[in-house]
Length: 443
Image (tube, helix red, strand yellow):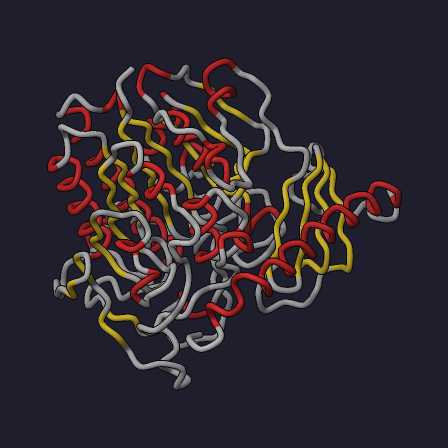
């Protein structure tokens, strides 16, 4: 069987409810909705973290963030540490299977030499290294207001800094992605398309804003930014179709975490919480281990190789590495992974659900066991206080985690809490033994 091409498309801070096929009534995402209609729509897919650097590390390595060496949002200065070649990426694994590998867009997994994309399995890199960027000047401003860092230009082609002042970054990422596909149409390729939209700063050209004349300003900008991404996905799909590659391309789409409530989204100097993105029916936002921070829109397409379906069983982004690798002829057992291949599920409907899923974010820890979800020291947003020391929900009847069942099911709480804290202790121990030293002088 011919090796499939692989494209992973990642958006940034896009909420579960900010996609037409996931229930949005005011956004327009026809190309992504069409992928959902003709492919696999995961309605209970999770990110491995509620913030960007750890979630990206988990997606690319198949490991929980703490086991990949990235547990927090990474710094954006040019000596910042992050992911290292000691932890293989999907790009590293696919290169061994004969693939050419490329990334277009956001990295945010470290800026010093050994942490950059070309040192971590990617043959080609076109994009930026820090966590957020002005969409037109391509300058990293974060932290300058309080003296934390100087503004830094951050646009690269492999190891060379390049300048494209005025080019809207979402469109540039699409253009570079299409060029990569055309350049490598005769060989198996892996392309990681990491859009930074709809992460702040909230920038969108007028042609996208005009599509949403009746929306309030904050929602209009969000809708326009996602619409630009959707157009980009459409261009990528059309390119594959024109080249006769679509049926032999495994295409996976997800967001990195839930939508931001940060006041800096507004761009108007106010300190008000931002409401441009939506988590749909879920509680919590970016940074939170409640569902709104980690339950994400996720779609998968593989031409005629898959029967269209909607899958509601819970899976996690660490499953993508082994799934893709096995589909490409590799052996997931050759790697240390926390995820598991979903290929048996996709091909024959075999049950691949995990016994437990775990998360950690600073003082928060969470675990899902069957339909039950336990959050320890959970927060709804980064700037709010602890919601409760322990919060237990039955997601089958309360997906919004509105009702705390901790007092009703003490034995179940104890079992799940013990599992979560035992897992977390393993993360902490390994971190101190193996990864903490990477950050001692650079972050």
